[in-house]
Image 1 (cartoon, one colour):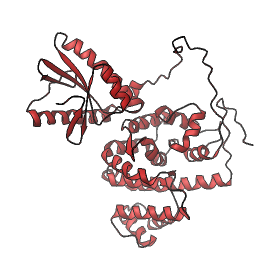
Image 2: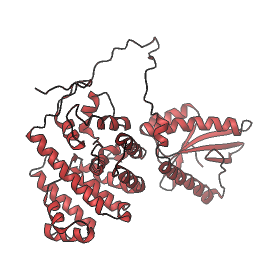
Image 3: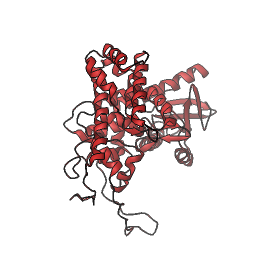
Image 4: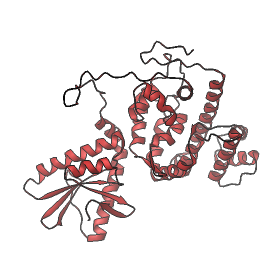
Length: 405
């Protein structure tokens, strides 16, 4: 029987049986490989999308295949050979190429790493191509997240929050008709890169644990998982936390008695986290500003090229005069619309549009619009439509939306 901890979450202590220990050892080999490659890479390499893709793939694994450990090892070595642009004929030959590329890793260490089986998170082949394409599209932000997580911090949990905020700001990955959280594919490598060994893996298999502590697969969920590491549940690091999440049995969440519901179905205001969604947006202001400015530049270039007009700006992002007869168009640009951070940006845009129209152009006929990098989900469309706010987004070089510019 699992030994219960004294913690208030009613979670069991980590058992650390033989099978769990073997699993943890495999994950630690993976972390060592990833950290070795990252440490040996120069500044230019660390911003190279091909290296970022290689590190991410080192964190993936398969399941359900005969002799899967060896097949994953060979698959990983072929990916390393592709990165080095050499043929993979033997571990010895590949070790020489790896040492030539990363001189600080000794030949014997290279050979040892190539001979060991690694891989952490189950990640389906159907999602891999889309995830790598997504990574390349957002390489500057992903590289910054890797850099931040690979440093020591006096406040490890705050570091984790900020890195998770960066990742969530990227939006969802579209793959096979589904929208995937970037946490699924990227947290294995983030976990490996963290020298404090507290950044948790967030994927389908950790959701049982998240549900048991009544958290979701978002920024706050990432931080909450990291806080389980420690003596309370006898979990030493993120490697053990991942195995713990995958192998232990957890209690079902307590049923909530809706005693505080009023007649209209609402409930009393309760205690809230002191870190609100607006703080999540501003936590990485530099990165979001860069993405925001690119979006505005794309709008400006589109209007100049198509109509030879330049939108105006002030405190607001863009104002298009006489976009249709007798009407101006006030536009606020946002870098994301999905997840808690994206939803907060949409809410912020709504408030800004109404505020700017009332403050700066109270006596003019001004329509309102939100500009996004990509087409949002149905809920955002319905919300903006209910408020009479138009919607614009880019698809390649084309500007689409509920109106035409």
